[in-house]
Length: 183
Image (cartoon, rainbow, N blue to C red; front, top):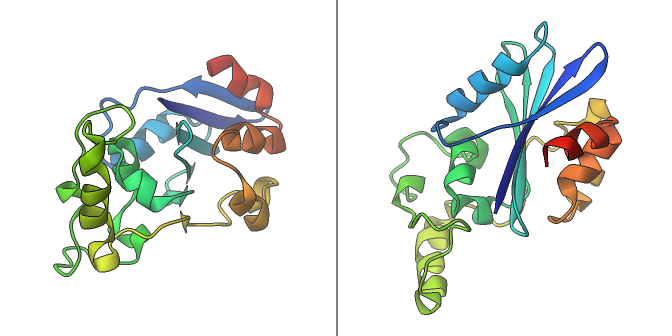
């Protein structure tokens, strides 16, 4: 199961809204969605979470390029929503690099958790698609200081567990109650 929400900073604190990602196909689409929620080009955080799998935080400050953190790139690569966040730049590869598989070649079978229906094929496909060429690393990728100025240090971000990460971040921001209203 997925959860996605926008947290927009205002002069009165944080405002939260859940968001549908069905029409979001690229990071640019996601950034535009965040900017629409912004008040006076203030900070907007996009939280995306796959229950017990991975979480991602996208930070949009006005017209600046989005800053992205993903807790587990390999897990996110098996998710259609995670695929939006895992840009070539984030993964440290050149656009169009032929030596590594394209994320579009991954078997995203449409199941909610991104896992193949046939468990026997699961390990085989994962090894073949994700690890060949080290295209998508295991573990966290992105800007580990994306929330440092908001009260969540790099060390704290890396220590977060998958189950309660977004609530922990929201609590540190003073936005736990507003996030809970959209959960």
